[in-house]
Amino acid sequence: MNTLFLGLIAAFCWGFHDICVRFLSQKAPVSACIFIVLLTGLLFHTGLMATTGQFAPIPAQAVWLSLGAGVFFVIATYGLYYAFQRGPVRLVAPLIAAYPILSVSWAALQGTSISTLQWAAVFAVVSGVAIVAALSDDSTDAVPPKGPTILYSLIATVGFAGTFALGQRAADLSHEMPSTWVTRIMAVALVVALGVLLKQSFWPGRKALPWLIAMGIADGVALLCVLSAGTLPDPQYAAVTSSMFGLLTILMAWGLLKERMTLPQWGGCLVAFAGVGYLAL
Image 1 (cartoon, one colour):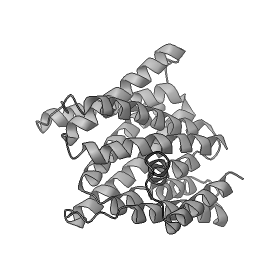
Image 2 (image 1 turned 135 degrees about the vertical axis):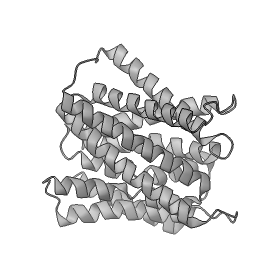
Image 3 (image 1 turned 180 degrees about the vertical axis):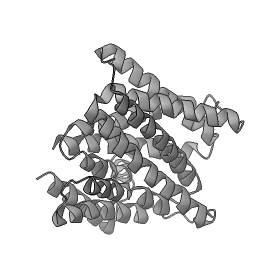
């Protein structure tokens, strides 16, 4: 149950993060947005470790796994930002939310026993998110060609699955706090290197900065939650529940902004939560 709860916390945090991505990516350089969010996440994580005194050496294998997770996280982040920048949400969100299928498939290849009903529950969660996301975006605005958008979304999907697989393994071998810290250091270093190499901007503008800092803290909490599940039974299911970020974003808009929810969307919510409920048994 703790694994699923960590995934849900991550989903709420990434839901907030992605609302902001869709808005800010239209107004500030994507490279600058990514840099500030990841740097804030690193500083947040460093402060958390300093406060709790959890700096500790980790095995060499865990270091390499954490570095690999950092590479995949940068891939996922760039894919997500560019996909949401292009839109529409009804196309992007369901594709990115499919990463749990890869996470559970990887766990199965590693020898974890996944029953038919558990597979059905995973597909229920992914399908429910897809239904809600697809029906939520009724924009008639012109959008760029779908081919590159689909490619960016699939890159993000693979990136998130790789991040969670390697990061959870590293946390299992050592401790989630220092291993996630290594992942974040690697991610920031890669973004800086890419920015310098491609001569990209690192400054998003004063108006975007407070939002990006808030997004970085939310991203820091979310990634820590999912990677921390590596020390718990069935860590792959944290990835499953975290994929509900798109659904929870829409639910937050309904509850806080009074946006309308249709009956089919409520049906998609029911399907997704039914899948989570079964995995919690």
